[in-house]
Image (tube, rainbow, N blue to C red; front, top):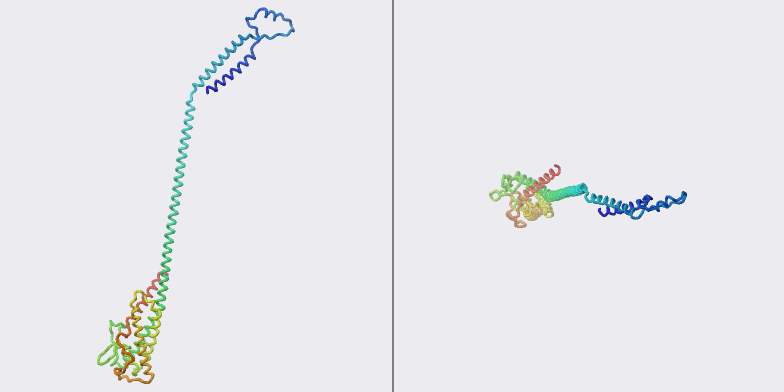
Length: 352
C-alpha cells in the first residue's frame, strides 16, 4: 500500500513541477542591474519586447519549496494511510468467514440429514420389499401346500372311488346276494325237514345275521357246512339244487373280482388278503363238489331224502379247513362302509 502511495505522490510531484514552470511570471527580480532596466524602459514603442525569464536560482528555490510542501503532504498522507484502522474490515472479513463456515456447517448438516432420511427411506423400502417378498413366499408356500394337499386329497379320493367301485362295492353286493340265496335254501330245508334242519341264534357266529343253520347227524346237531354236507341235501329230493347252483355261480363272480382287484384292499385290512386266499380255496372245493353232484343228478341218480351219504364215496376228501371263511364278509362290509363315510367327509369339506 505504501509503495502505491509513494508512486502516486511522485507522479503528482512531477506534474505539479511542470505546471509551475509553465505558469511562472515574467517579472524582473529585485537584484536586476539598473542598466538592464533602463534599457528596457528606453526601448521605443512598437519595437518587439524581449521576455525576461527569471533567474535559475530563484526558480529552483520556489520549486524546491513547493516540492517540500508536497513531500510533507505525502508523508502525512502515508503516515495517515499506515495508521489506518482495519478493525471494521477485519470484523467484516471475520463475519464473512463465520457466515461461510456456519453456512458450510448448515449445508453439511442438512446434507447429512437428507442422506440419513434418504437412507432411512431406502431401508424402509427395502424392508417393505423384503416383507412383501416374504409374505408372497409364505403365501406361495401355503398355496403350494394347499395345492399339494388338494392334489393328494383328490388322488386319495380317486383311489377310494376305485376301491369302492372295483373291489369293495362288487364284493359287498355279491356276498349279500350269496348270503340271501343261502338263507333261502336254509329256510326251505328247515320247513321241509324241521326234525333234521334248524336255525339257532348265536351272537358269536361269524355270519352277519347272527344265525347258525344246523343239521342233525348221528344223533346230534352240528353246524351245516356246504362243502361237508352238500351230499346230504343235493339230489335228495328237497328241491334246493338251484339254490346251490346259484351260490356257486355267484362264487365264481366273487373269485373273478378277487383275482383281478385284490390290490385295492385297504391298508388297515391286511387280514382281508389272507381271507381272500381262504375263499379262493373254499370255492375251488365247492365248485368241484357241486359239479360232481350236479352231474349225478343230471344222470338220474337222485337219492331219497331219507337215505344218507355216509356210504357214498365223495369225489374228494374234505375237512373243516375248506369251509366258507365267514369273516370275509364282515371285513368287506366294514371296508365298504368306511370308504363311503370317508368319501362323505371329503364331500362335506369340498362343499363347506
